[in-house]
Image (tube, rainbow, N blue to C red; front, side, top):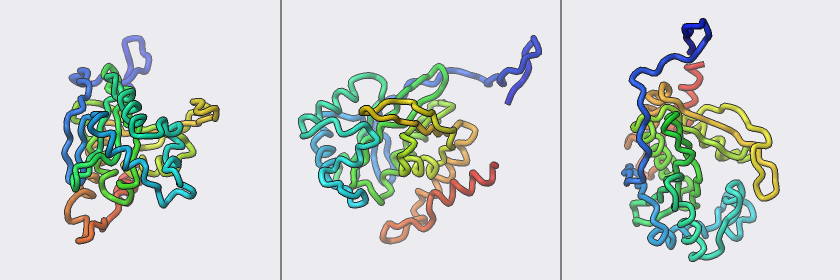
Length: 248
């Protein structure tokens, strides 16, 4: 939406009661299916290394459990010590804010996620550096972990939550839209990764969209949406797709 300034020029609407949101912290976030903990390289590296070593049956030729790192620039370590060193490098600064994703069934870390490119002055941040192990596949853990991050960002007062991925990473693009992120286009020749071109697909959720998306998340997470074997009765994508269609 736009309005007009004193010179007759179109400008964006004023933001009522505008104030910068606080910087997100890595405090514990409890969900029904998972828990997010501040990433502790020494404590979480052993379980993350083991989880990331497991081959993914959905990826052909995943003999060394490396294929899932293709769109992340490749796995940066070859053993547990290297994994811990990489986690230390990742979590050494205030941005990104890193979380370990914990399976409450055994208390072990099964993946990680971060906030990055955090700009409180613009009330924007990105969810990224998603490293999900095969232990999270086909479980509600992966969805709820991301829902917890999105929810916390908007609760702090952020106006825009971003998602970016390699434009060729079809699973990531599908995951973004399933969660309610809207595609904003592709930045052509955005990056060079391992000597290869990367076009980057951009997605976002903004604050006036969030209440309806949050309602979809809550409906999907509800106990009655899962049968006795933990299988969903109604998919999240069917909820968010319906919402998107109704707003066009």
